[in-house]
Length: 539
Ligand code: C2O
Ligand code: CU
Image (cartoon, rainbow, N blue to C red; front, side, top):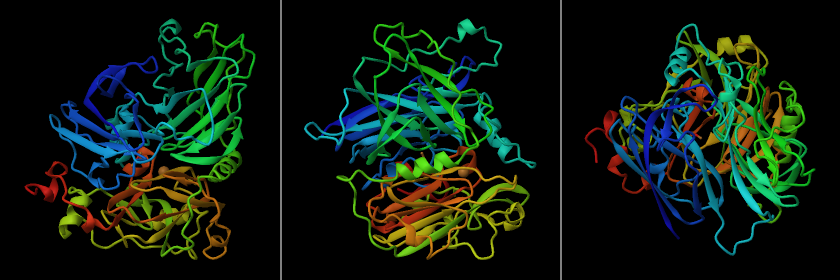
């Protein structure tokens, strides 16, 4: 196994990703950052030098379970202190499974400013994957604001709340077009082709979404896609015309160049789930021999109806099935079930998200340190409730949300090491009388996706319908509007792990929970994660 060393300078640079120049947080001058490539079993070492001058940072390796290295998860407030301006911090971890993963800033809402990228782990030589292709390419999808992170965060903490609003553009591999700008169109040309296809060949596209807000639909005009991998796990192949993808998810899709090779085709990313005020991002799939910048002769695809959730739920269900040769057996029953209500409510005059009445605020001392060292004063001792009162709470009522209330706290669930945990996420209408999609991401584990349902989850009745036969494992899952989503995982990774909505504004408003398991079994913590709050002076 190899060791891959990277040295990254994290700094603000002026970037014009969508023809509008603004300050972006960059990795060695690039936003998004470079794709990290490794082979299963390799070690990745990233030395991060914070050159932001006035801002802290921390980088999370999204989808990497960090078995035996919980201090390298990069979650500021949970697994480490922030990396201060001028400081250097080294992440070292093993990539133990092949698949398509991501990385991004995990300090406040810093991801919004562009610090993100992809992490691709290949199978070792000689290992055959359950599908074949000629070549692979990465496709990173993002949304992009012209407002700074600060402006966005201040608005969210204000009374009345000033929401971040819709993004100005969508980006495909860091390129987009802000079409309403005063910039002359010549300066804002169509980005170079996504890739150039040779007729008859099959391409593996590793598609990842690191949007801050938007749910997306990605399509390549005239070409169907076969979904073969989700979050690092092989799925039973499903052919789709276009791919719905939520922030924090990755998919591999196979695309065969089987169309008229004398022209190019649009590759497009569209907003779904929220009223579409952002123009879709356009790139092209070029066929060899054509000018790779030649716009396709057809109108730009319009994308699916933004407000039709049915095909999205349907696709979530159809891709949640493991490849028959790669299904991992599911423990037959849980030791503990958490029924988590996603409530949008007011707490102390501020609009927040609360999970079973607790709106998460990260403590000044990272949980990993305080829990490992028994610093009980460093976080709220009373854990949140395992279930909300599902019999009396009306998930369809905005008045219920308004009345729900709750507390802002740094509480955490303590899970028995090795126990089987079911989590049922319950959606509801928000204060604005709508219910939206929340992509939930779990650090440190993969979970089996047991089911998606509509309306209020009824224990007993709905558990009977769980897929325990061949569910796929993932690390990020969509909670659809007015629905519920059920997952199961084994709490067998000693450490402290965040589970949260991957919408930056939502986690900033408290939409997450913390799981501790076997924190005393964690070996000696590196002193580099300490230094803040009550961990000052520890080593
Ligand atoms: Cu990609 Cu905690 O997130
Ligand atoms: Cu959310």
